[in-house]
Image (cartoon, one colour):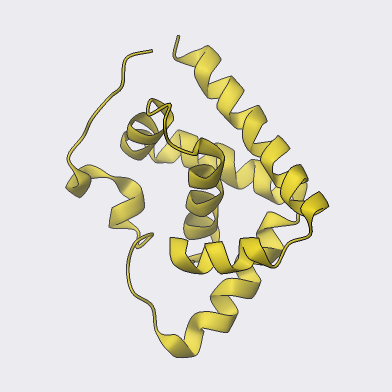
Amino acid sequence: MKRIYHSYEKWEDWQNGMFASHDPEQQDKFVWDAKGLLINPSRLLSAMETVIIHWIISSEVNMTHRGRNRQAWLGQSACCLVCGTPENLTKIAWNMLSEFEKSEANKIADIVINNWDKNHE
């Protein structure tokens, strides 16, 4: 698959605050909300599918970039979309998960990635 590029100003993840700074007083809430999403398989699958459907430009940029950790991008995007959590705080939440929880979240991401790849061959 050929890599697709778009200017960052068009990226829905950027537009929705995935890389924005946050209010330090909100940090714990963002982290716990992200953790709650990451450990809930059905909610996580729904959130990741919503990212792919509604963040078309960001999905094209990140899903066609085979050198990128697409699992991480999907998880960070899902947490941003559903919880408003910036990616740096999603990383904190991720590091709070057990190895089993991380494995399960990555399996969910792989389902979404495989479906995206099949639909964009």
